[in-house]
Image (cartoon, rainbow, N blue to C red; front, side, top):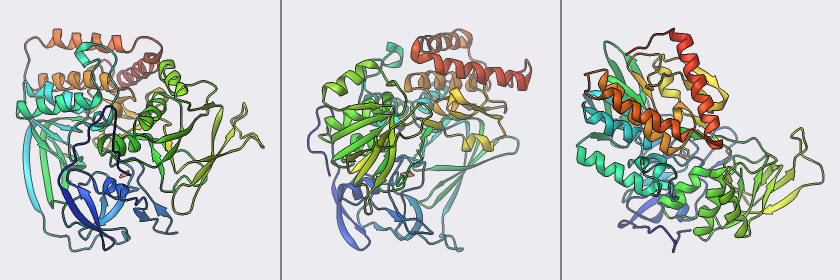
Amino acid sequence: MRIKEHPILEFKRGKEIYFYYNGKKLKAYEGETIASALHANGIKILSKSAKLARPRGFFCGIGKCSSCLMKVNGIPNVRTCITLVKEGMVVEDDDKDLPSKEYPPCSHKKMKCDIAVVGGGPAGLSAALEASEHADVLLIDENPRLGGQLIKQTHKFFGSENERAGTRGIKIAEELEEEVKNRGIRVLLNTSVIGYYERENHFLACVNKMAGKVYEIEAKKIIFATGAQENMLIFEGNDLPGVYGAGGVQTLMNVYGVKPGERGLIIGAGNVGLILAYQLLQASVNVACIVEAMPKIGGYFVHAAKIRRCGVPIYTRHSIKKAYGDGSVEGAIIAKLDEKWNFIEGSEMDIECDFICLAVGLIPSIRLVAQTGAEISYINEAGGWVALHNEYMETTKEGIYVAGDLANIEEASTAMIEGKIAGLHAAHSIKQIVGFESKIKKYMEELEIFRQGYFGARPKKAKEEIRRRYYEKMGDRRNS
Ligand code: FES
């Protein structure tokens, strides 16, 4: 299942190590997650559902869906997609235990900062870098490394040079990570923020589960850049191991160099589905077809043309009816849709595949920011529930900011600019920054440019509605 050759990526595997899965000794490489090491060993079933014991596999690959929970070194409910495998680790798929009442001993640490940034993706990294020019910043991320979804984006970015156009996402992640290091920003990795509370300042409760560490973080301002999670689609067999979110497959393949299977079916012909199809082909994985429910392909024409040239059919006005297989995906039934989105009887096609990727959109990850009391509102164009915020990315709750996908599903370039705006404004609201007005104006103009044209229309509309509702709630007022 490991990718041997790749036209763009070079997989620098770490030291060879061994771990145990249900008592069986398996090979892995340092630096890869437990779930990717299991996939590399051909193991797709990671746990069983609690009631019916249905097999469960990896879906999102970024710690957001909990379908990869396993028992690791006796600790239940470990998200194996974001936990690195270690020499001698004991991994079990029997994860039905409730955590014991006797909590294992753990260390407690109190930390203080001017600005806490939650999430080390493009928005969070940019926010931390911008804010750190003027304030003491602490960056927290639950992944083993920084970069968020950039670390799996092999395509070159569009847009302006300021936002690193022409550079691949994976390279941008490396550059930003390096800048964070050089700037001396404090970073907590493998650390999940599990709660927010308020006294005179803002507080976050965080845990590093595998290391047995609990943190209490006090911050004057918090910027939430917690990203988004992938949408699920309702169809028979959608819980079979081998049904993945598109991003989960990109993680497996582009970050860890592991194939999701030999022949895939992709649901959704937006840019994500089209780019993913090409990336699968680059990794020598066959793509049976792409299925799109809309009458037209949603992604860029240039991507669709490239996929078709590679011989992959794209079926518009089709959807998936069913996935089947014994323990994991062995095939799928797709069918044509009528004008009312019903399947047309007799139009079914049996697609031979051993995995299915859902590229059917994202929803903002707002669960943490919602704990702060910031006003949350449903805005369809923004991708779902979002925290209302003003042009400086501050929410209705004083000192609480958002940036990136959790503030409107968009793309990495705009996430980076929003991160800079949030970081700059949060720092300015602690201590006046000389040249603040001109700098923030420049960032806002850059955002405006990104949101022009056909693909910018939806996010632009979403932002207008977010701001309209923000000021409806706040009057003419801003917090800071
Ligand atoms: S949380 Fe691990 S696959 Fe979603």
